[in-house]
Length: 132
Image (cartoon, rainbow, N blue to C red; front, side):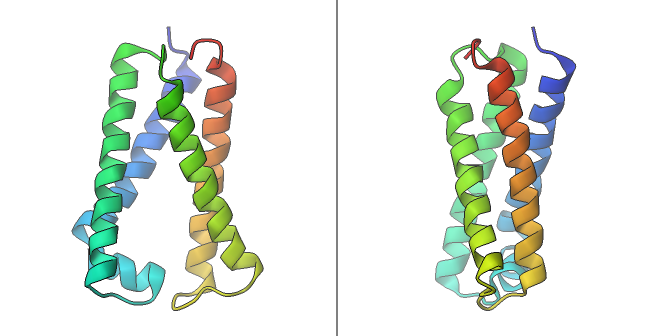
């Protein structure tokens, strides 16, 4: 049975991925300009694919809420690794002070958000590792 903290972490993940998927799918050009500093068709296509991937993560988390954690290690570990690598990549831009075409504030905000999600998912994996 789920504990309340586990459900809360899953709901936070759903909100996190929902925000980014909506931004990537519905506001592709604005999101690319604000976060990447430029927009073209290649960036739009990659942004939309990433938004679709985030939607599949949302579906996976919703299924976990209804079915339990059992045998979900590959899914949860994949999301954890994705978020960890994304956070490290954002922090790399922050520490090297090379945000490219966008502002350092936006890169820092994304780095902080992804880092918080990594911590939440590390907690979720650690608490439930024996169930996975």
